[in-house]
Length: 70
Image (tube, rainbow, N blue to C red):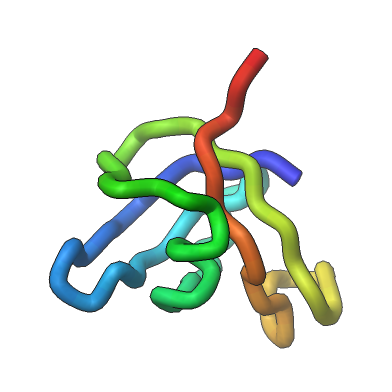
């Protein structure tokens, strides 16, 4: 699934992405670390892997965040 980086805190290595429908979904340090990233800037397109319900973003948990590559 693709999303756009919305917020990122380098100290906690956590933040939020916006799904394509505009729904913000948080990610934690474990999801950030799983992608092997060092930095994330708001506005970057990312690829995410998730667990849970994909409805309105509630119950959706991000397990991996990495940069979107073509």
